[in-house]
Image: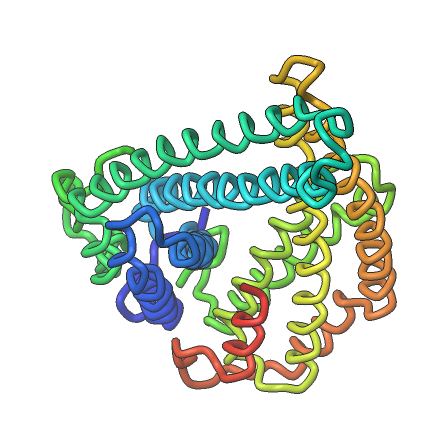
Length: 195
Length: 174
């Protein structure tokens, strides 16, 4: 495991710059969280969260462990948004198939009558689509809860400030005498709650 | 910054080279299983690895101001796309099968017809995946990265703002 970065490191500046940028890209979509109908925007937020996570993972080995729990939190947000997206894709697919199944009956009218199609298959598609809607509602509530925890725990402020770099000062070359380890730069109370 | 052994300082450029090399190796390590086409998890693993590599390409791109690096980034993007479409279909097929199996037999036909259609689409996509892997092999990305790294010189800090080229690539990939 590499040693944590110090303020003199180029890589530290690079890490802070990129993580802050990827974070801001994710936060652009935050206003859309309030309404579950923002399907496209929540998907865009998922992509932004994924980019943030992968960028954090590049620098996590150099952050002295300060990014680890934050990576986990972003991963959880990203995964829940991914499951929401899956439901958003599946429900219309199922509805579209139901429409295909119904089309001959609708267009054929009385010439097809009630004899021509297996409507049980349409019922199956409708039930499955409805199940996706219910699942989506649950996932959305979970996501909102996870986001509030992410926000309340101060994760955004930590990522913006670069306070995840636990060892912010270079170690002294010669210590005159042993002394207790100093407290880390990130107080425990500022760590995001586990979600 | 210290190297992985904590022994001596390494530059941002050296770190960039190391991260790109490691992530490229991970991505390529999944190629053989993906080529066989029998393991959907292999597609997932390679797609995730390619995404991670792309993240590193974005972050460190400014360290490599060369046309070779733009070419490298483009090749990674192409394989990510092919794998992404295949993976999305795999996920959908799995989810639809689960939904179908949760229904009584008399109500399964419509969902299973949809599964069959998606499987056909997935088989077509496997051809694209195979073509992307062949292309990847021909382009010899490890050799290309070596060429890029050979021209690497310690320089000023990278601007954290990604270049226009990377913005354009990422926008199309979303």
